[in-house]
Image 1: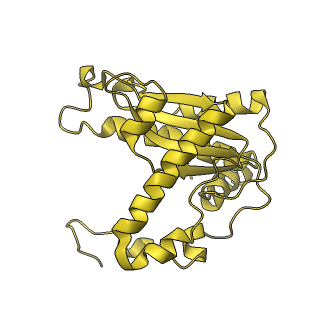
Image 2: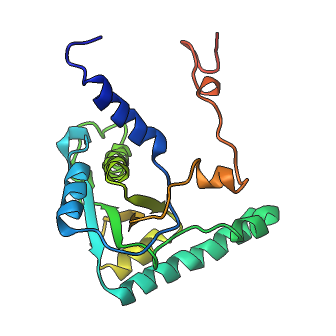
Length: 216
């Protein structure tokens, strides 16, 4: 083992946070202390980013009326998604897809505007800015789990409608509505698996050798 490795206990804690991270939909109200919220956002801000462009922007939603407007956008898209699912629409409508009005904090994670100016690492893969923001969200997620807080990533919304609601400049794009706060318990497995919506597939089905689709 590398001499740069963490101790066994520290490594176990890292893998535990990864293994127990859940996309939470059920929250217990409460609040997140300002110092803790700052610590979590700093963890997000330490994410890697292509060309060090740091494309993430976070908007903290503190107005209750604005929360309700955001929730209404999600509900509108929830209905549209159900319609698009056809035979699975009824099953989908039974799922709890957000906790916007129940969680302690709501954050909107967005891509900054004027991203086209950043060429390093994006000339052939312009979507790497989105990958960088996703890394920041994952940092926040894992740090929240380590702190005993739940977080849920809500993606059911029209990006332009949410951008307009939050006064984002042209070119900026919201990627996630993040629900954050205390929970009574963490799901023992992904909620969609517990609800019978989908079954997780093993890594072995997704790992190839040398060529696409080739496996030992």
